[in-house]
Image (tube, rainbow, N blue to C red):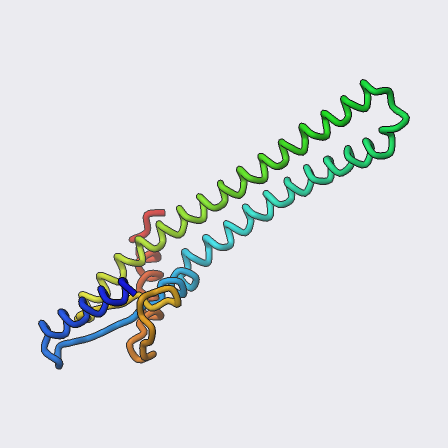
Length: 177
């Protein structure tokens, strides 16, 4: 609610300071722009490759752990106490290692996703600012489902234009990657 009131106040200030014929409003769905731009699509593909590789490694570890567990269950009763304890200890150690690896890999993937997203969003915001200045927009709002804009007409949605400008900028040598 507080965010909505702030946005409403900003809009009222902008509207009161700009004449009605000069006021130009735009809305960009940053989430859609992020997913639709070339860099976002490539980042999503690269990220999926990383996730698939990690999943394969984790599945291999999990299979090994299940094999040890089955061995302990099948042979546990016929083994000497020392051998059984060693097998159980080995199983527990591999299980802890697996859990640590899983947790660490999830955190690493989340961090990598955040880094990629932040970089692309920073570039998109630069493109939006440039586009807004060139096209004489008075105000451009973020209009995703999580944004403060509760409704906007498709007539003011400039997401497609922003994606085109972003892709053109990156192809034209403005890319940092």
